[in-house]
Length: 138
Image 1 (cartoon, rainbow, N blue to C red):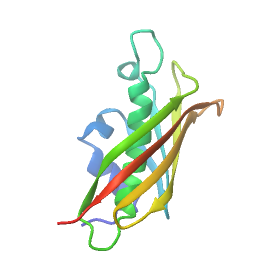
Image 2: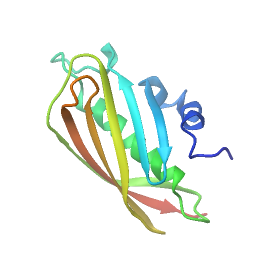
Image 3: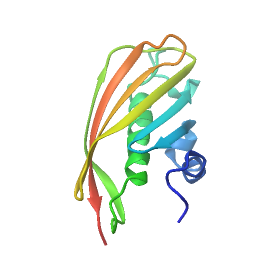
């Protein structure tokens, strides 16, 4: 299997999946941290003309999920999200949206990740996100 700590490899894996269709780009996969971005396009918008909350959640969840894959414990075969929560604090109509995610807990059975999503141009916080991942074993 490819090195899952390499952002380019994760971008290739996601290319034909939901993150790729949404234009989510992994920038860096570090030790228990991830940075990503998404250029806001028409298909990211809600009917009210602003960025759809689900687009923000997809960016944050993808960042945390890719971080989980890069930090699976030895012997783990994968993971699945068992809980997520987001608080939306602002929105945008255009530009780049950035995400930073970091591991809060990386145990053998669960991982907890926090992410912040913000406007790339102004730095304004758009959302705070937390998810819990269940680690799977064959």
